[in-house]
Image (cartoon, rainbow, N blue to C red; front, side):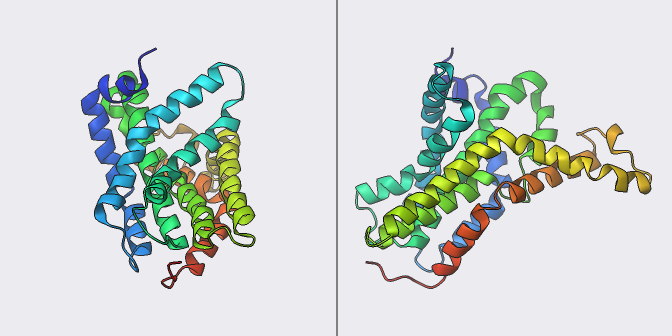
Length: 272
């Protein structure tokens, strides 16, 4: 019943601050990739970093709205989570467009701002889960499983979804709504929202299934995975493996769209 901002940032502020910094360090490879994609026409630093901070600060509002809808029984979680969280990641791009902070946005700009929004959401979600659940229950020891369980070799699905939704919005903006740009752009965003919802419904089974498939090969070399503790070094490796498999498999329809967007905007686009 605590107000969302108090629950996120006030109940265990030092744990929340530490987890925010840890999450930023975890996703530094994603940040490097975003900076690389932004190399042709770099976004101003206040807009670049402000996009990440904006989503971190706006996420508690999204959480409150989402759980209000779920608690009322109007819609199940997996139906609500995709639209609300993906729209939250796109808010920095919407603000930039609405206030005219950048003229003639390209599709690459859409990818960058979407990815930054996704990065902000990945950071705050990791931190909030730790500060409101993991830390009160297990203390700092919770990080032993929380970090490998949410670290897909430096990225996270929120970053991928945000970047892909940015493909759709960036394409629409760059084409100024001409031709098929509106239905194509909206279809891409809808695909991301649907993927997010399906991931939250079924994604929890993908990682464990991937580990189960390793049991027999591991036994052949004398390793019993069933006896492994998540806190052990090999257990942590399995958690990372699980996170990677989940990220790859649950985004099978998203990867081609993101690749198309990146390749289609690999050269500086004409700002229209």
